[in-house]
Length: 359
Image (cartoon, rainbow, N blue to C red; front, side, top):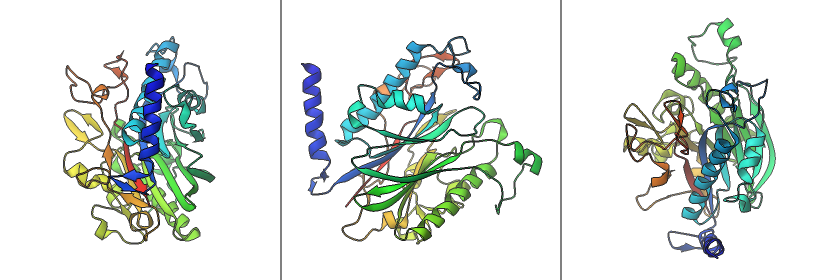
């Protein structure tokens, strides 16, 4: 009975929230977000992937029970965001997933199965065996096509620390582009997980990632005049870093955004102290979403970004107490799956982020 009442209340909030924001009736809202799922691996050995740590006999003793707990936790966060917004995400980009199977297991979890999420995923070349992917609601987003864009060094204006031989051997996640329509308007979504900082990897690699996305987005804008673009991902950089501010042309103020620039809503939030992850006492926002000028300044009657809270922010770093470590050395940090090599049954070492668009 309690579950039935919960479902009824949620559906009522979904019905109201879909068409109203901040008391404005008649506005159909769409939530576009990103979530780093922190090593969502299955329990099966894939010889083509470096998944040895995430096997029952591996370092993390990754059993079916732990895997199922992880799936439940990820679905709980997605459902909690839906409850808070009165609707499920229309678009949810994800990273650190091993394969399509883990996504199929995720979207079928009882907490979110009713969302009917569809999956866009390509197996990539990352040496750790993790990919990016995109989940979408087919009732709201009409899929047209997609592309897995490889990380290459050719044609770049950047001076790299790696020599040519090292560049040939370098492997990282591909960048996912998904093209479709919302309310009849063309959209392109880019999902990225740019090279990490571990092992001394420099900002030149992440700058190259920004450059690849930007050049591809320019091509999409030329091919589809008026197309609306959102770039999202774990950039392993803050919005002030060169990869985002220079090579992706991310601007802090809407007034600065030209036709070939991107608006970076989390840039001002980062300067105000917001964070999606913490390391050694310092908060960062690596989980970024940037939008092109067409989505920022759409004419009346077109889909455009809207303020997402009463303080006028255009972005949301979503956190709830159950997603936060409550005690110990990492009190206040995201409540993660593992800590110091031990399974602690948390959620992710990143908080999810999202924006809201509407007519």
